[in-house]
Image (cartoon, rainbow, N blue to C red):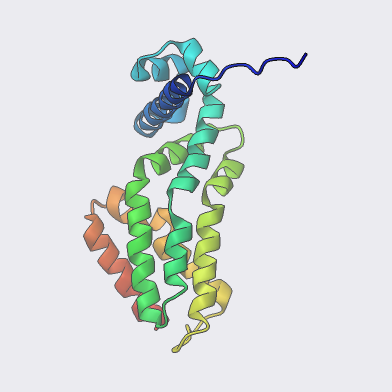
Length: 203
């Protein structure tokens, strides 16, 4: 006689997913505000309105939570859709304008996630690998944009690798953070400056 499959309640699964999302959201906010090393699982549980054992059962340890934040940040960045649009453009200025706007939207929308990751790096047991995981897709996208720029006219006066390095310098998370967080620039003003700098240098 075949064994019965365990019953899975859609409502229970939905509630569990909502709980996980809330825990990750509150953890991201706490990591960004206080720094990863100063936040405990109990702090996360309190902020999410659940018990500590629920955090462990739903998401895992503090390290597991940070891993999920990194992975979700990569998924939520929307870089694939943005790059499809950028690679369809036919002038260097249009490409650079789209890069400036697209990376601005990504950095502004993912600001709390980026801060959570950045503040974890000094105390994380493998901070270098963590940063690489968080930024590899981002760097790959800018490298693809650099290769595309070198198929257009006028071609940048640098190698593809140097062009990719410059795009990372301007449009990577550190460039945005330097202007907006460290120097208090509005996002619109930062986008305009970075876009004009890139056009003036590469075109």
